[in-house]
Length: 107
Image 1 (cartoon, rainbow, N blue to C red):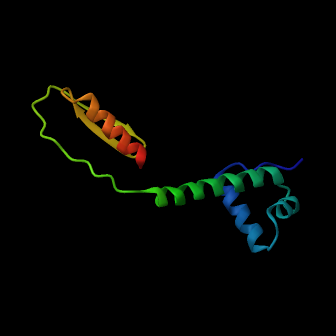
Image 2: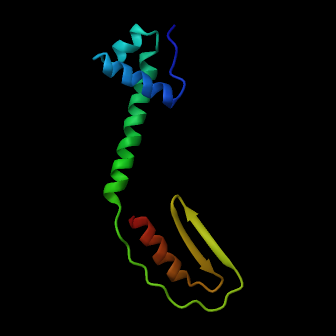
Image 3: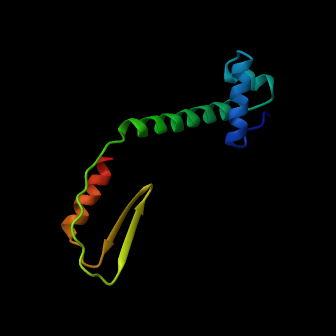
């Protein structure tokens, strides 16, 4: 029984070794007692992650937001989603929040 790849570090090292040996990952895995399906799954997942990072850079755009004067408020709320952040006060307007969320979605 061949052993499975345990983590990303090991998967990257195995894929690098296969490339250096000029072998397909499955061939390299068989020669080294590693489950080829496990190595292939890591290869696919790592490729997806790299493609996601590249597409995130491509899809990045500029969205202009215009600030309005803020009256005195009792509390502040910070909404964080991934790397985006919206800060609101008690007197925020619903339609403003909707515009901000739409702007974030377009990114």
